[in-house]
Length: 162
Image (cartoon, rainbow, N blue to C red; front, side, top):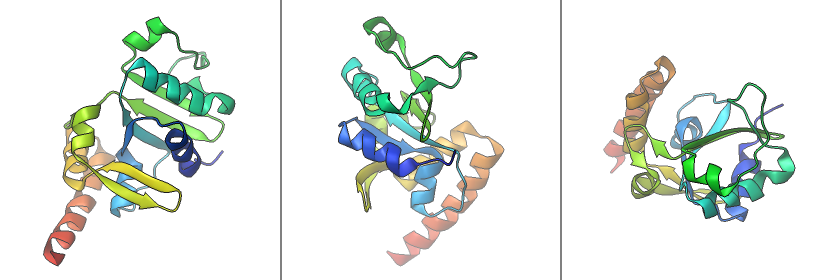
């Protein structure tokens, strides 16, 4: 099934989830040619925000994709208090909700280092290009370092326009 980032983002926005777009989709919004298989967001990991995520996705049959038996997303107070990340598979694609971004920090730090990106279906916080570079460098995988090269070229080009 193809990834439907628009559908996932629209649902998160509709349910007032507090999040910042990070990862590959953020890179694409900045102009890199990366192909990504999931949507990564940094969220406020508080029970009320986690419940908003649950409500936004409940009719999409979300399951924890990093568990061997693909358990359905069913939050309770105890689980909400210990969750740090949520890696989900839904009927319209994969959504990774992270409580912290390597090289950037938690949701509050990600929000401080974000910009508003306007799409036809809404305005969204995305990491600014410097924060995205820092995050991808901190992760350090081959594909992340390739993305950093592209992001630096885009940043240099944008800096010269100013």
